Image (tube, rainbow, N blue to C red; front, side, top):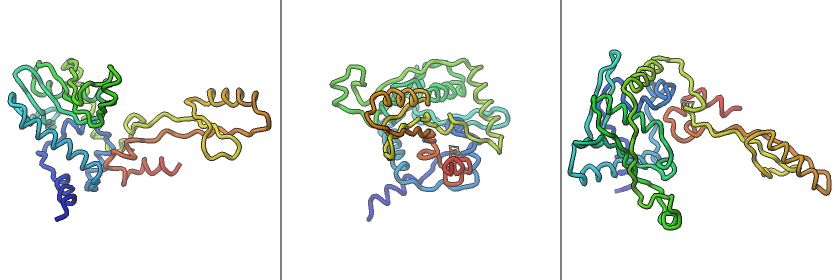
Length: 266
Ligand code: SF4
């Protein structure tokens, strides 16, 4: 038996119940959702396996934590649509979601996480405090020992601030409204576009001498260099457009997306 093949097959099981829209879909680009209505998600063993590790982690936490209700499927009807969500843990005094994530992501404020938990709270008409329990996949013991600001354990709790019900409902209605747009295009923020850089090249060099955030900084660098150059040197500035990280690595629709194709043909 090829055990790796068997494990990859596990990643392709989908036991989600049917509703019009899930809470997690609210955070995906509308164009991706539209494209995926027409196409079957292509298996991607590398990222599907990473997700499977998250599922394994969820199962261990569900079995190990003895209090509260686990994996609670919730729905709410709004504007004629059924919104559904799966809450990892609801105890007498809090709403909890587990994330299997990086140290970097857990260390910064994540607007999506804040809104996701608040949507769950709003769907349940609850006023319980909310928190994320984040398991840090790339946690490093050496850094934990040498840096006091680094998480001291590979698991952290993140308190989630409450957003008013009015604001949450407004967000959900706005997203549902966007979802009815069949011509939706992705914004730079949807595609997680990295910042453009201005790369300075010397003579015919293929590797950039230095990279800058603005063309002004690149030109100032060249001017400064020219003062100390002993012989004539030609400089070129080439603007490198920031990579669309979601399209490249995380969007299920990238194989069929014309907008992404147009970007790569620039
Ligand atoms: S490939 Fe990029 S542009 Fe196309 S739907 Fe996905 S995120 Fe949007």
